[in-house]
Image 1 (cartoon, rainbow, N blue to C red):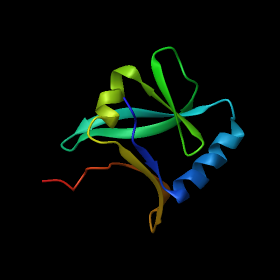
Image 2: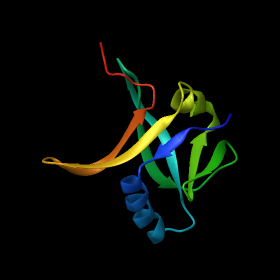
Image 3: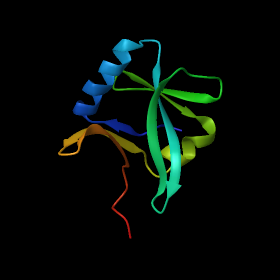
Image 4: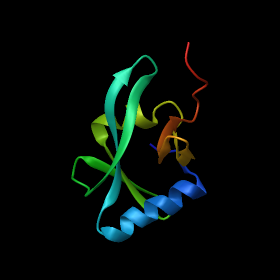
Amino acid sequence: MSPTIKVTPQAKEELQKFIQEKPESAIRLLIQGYGWGGPRLGMVLDEPTEEDHSYNVEGICWIIAQKDEHHILGKGGIRVDHVTSWFGSGFQISDIQSFGCC
């Protein structure tokens, strides 16, 4: 499977700050739960295992458990952004083909 993981410049800059603290780590994409719109995705710093697929995107190593890969990347890929609002700042992971809910 050829992954589609699009990373905005803002997200890349913020991710690189985390990776500098633990250069041996990678960014694990994972499923945190399910809702009406499908899986809710998250990210953590982690190390690859034998049950993962690894990808290098934008100079960042991404890992995904083989069992979750279809659910995470299956509909065309994901977009990772870093946003700032009145509520604070953080990463936002969205389905590239998502057009909103109901």
